[in-house]
Length: 212
Image 1 (tube, rainbow, N blue to C red):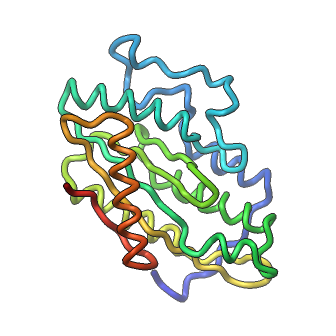
Image 2: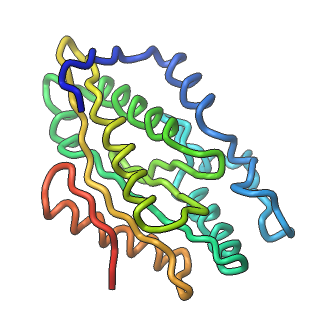
Image 3: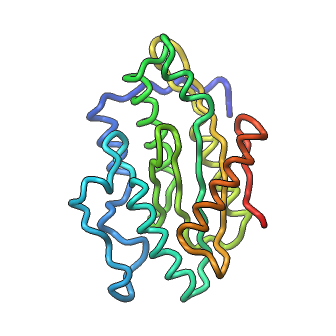
């Protein structure tokens, strides 16, 4: 990324909520037009479906979306991929004197908004843990497209953020898993997690694609 780029000022809580909600489609909207009742969206009144900090999907909603995406992929041979992102070094920086938990939460909200901004209409962004995020991507033509999305996300996250009187630059490790004919929700997420673990072993900013 261009090092001369201006640092992004952290938004207020209301601005963050508005930005995230405007860039992320409602969980009531399915990834594609439902062809049968199997693609019906879950009841969004359940609070566990939305992360309260970022407004992104939770692990519960992501699993539901993956399940429906796999059903469509198996019927129509549409490729699906899961991308897992782990923010490098965030746990140590957010617990330090310079980056307390309140500022850390604001940084995570910025990360979430940037992830949401990279999505197409039928994709899903989720927050799985403190500093771990996921993207569900459907209808991509080949593996190279998934890697291109990963690069686009990395570039978006790398833009500097002004925080606590300093400038924080965020990088992330990425693990990517694409569907095979025998995949279910658990195996696809497990493969993506294995790819993420391999990326972490390589170091900051690394990306790995799962292969048997």
